[in-house]
Length: 38
Image (cartoon, rainbow, N blue to C red; front, side, top):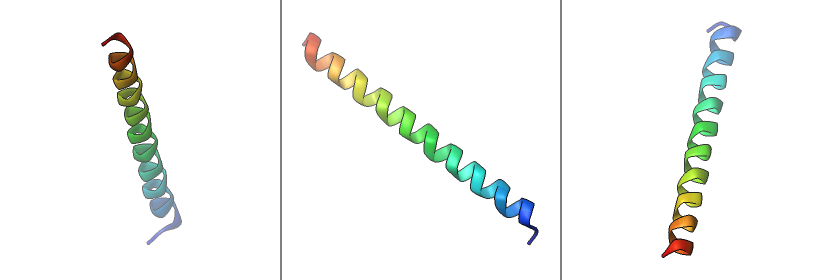
């Protein structure tokens, strides 16, 4: 397997992890806002 292919896969995985982390942070922020308003 070529190096660029491995790197591409690694970058994609890292991006997906970053997106998942952002989504989780957003969900947590929504939850906190809900608790405060409730």
